Image (cartoon, rainbow, N blue to C red; front, side, top):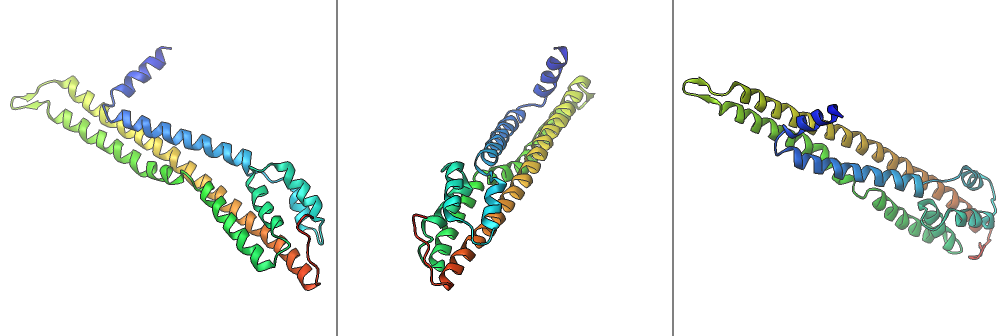
Length: 217
């Protein structure tokens, strides 16, 4: 318990800049939790569906049942559902609608990432501001007759170091999170493109054979 009080006291010594830094840290944490929830809840695709789509001449009815079980909020279900709703139309029509849906999904996955990217830049700059104000406080303690308050100098240096340390810590966490979720987003979009290509190949194959896939199948 004593260690916690000492840590809080050290953080408080960082000066006024610590408060906006904590706000940035809380915002970053909320965005990270939100992204983890989105990817774990709405970006899961069972391997059975992948294998079904990859198979030659797969059963559209079985695919419809499989994506229905995923739920309407699942992004893969939304994307495949758009293709299935339009599969009785020409392939170029289906491809256009699938591209529109993939852009909406990409926009949803990209939401709030720009805030993380901003925090990566803003947190160290705020820490640097705390460094400058802390050092200025130290320099003010030097009078015409020499050092006025030696303990005040160490307090100013501590303020400078604490603010810088907190800013860098928040920026590092936000940077790792931003890069990780950007990578997850890129992989998800590649997977959507691959699945869309397989489904469109099946539709084109049916067109070449002169078959029309019924909308309700």
